[in-house]
Every structure is written in structure tokens, then in C-alpha cells.
Amino acid sequence: MQTFTHYFLHFIAIGAIAWFYDKKNWKKNWLILLATMAVDIDHIFATPLFDPMRCGIGYHPLHSHFAIAGYVLGVLFIKNKLWKLIFIGLLFHMLTDFIDCLWMFSKCGECYTSSEIYKWVH
Image (tube, rainbow, N blue to C red):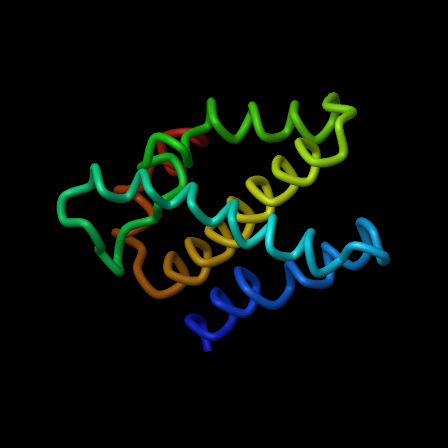
């Protein structure tokens, strides 16, 4: 169920965001939101490339607290509709990954204590 939820949020829920953002252009906006998934390019710097027991929030450069703060500022202060949508997509991507991390933490306490999120709150 965790994997289904993760990919549902990454691919399907963004369709709802696109529709609410601009009903007339929701298909184009959905494609733009899909393109924001390119933020995962930062995973190529990780070793191993994929670790199912690693929380990406705080671990990957474009998933860092500095990057997330930038995405929040973009959503709040950017007026250009295209750029605002891109920042919304990036922020929603982080939320989706965070939900995935919480799910993982519920099954793996060591995953939490070794995560960057743990370092942020302790």
C-alpha cells in the first residue's frame, strides 16, 4: 500500500492540483507538475543509488531543508503562474516523499534515527 500511495501522489494526485490550479489548462499543468519529478535527478549522487530504507528528505541535495525552504518561498512569493506551479510541484513532491518517510519510519525505528529529519528535530 505504501508504494501505491507514493506513486498515486506523484502521478495522479498532481492531476487534481493541476485542475484546481487552472481548470482550463489542467492537462498542460499536469505535464508541468510531472516534469517537476525531475527533482529526483539528485538521487544519482547517492550511494547506493536507491535504498528502500533511506528517507530522501534531507539526504539528497534538492530534497534538503534549504531547497525545501526555497520551494516554500517560491510558492508564497512568486507571482508568475508557471514558476509558481513549478514550485507547487516541487513542494508537493517533498510532501509526498515525506509521507513515504513517515510510513517507513513506522516500520523501521533505526531508519528514523539515522535520517536527516531526525537530526533536524533533535
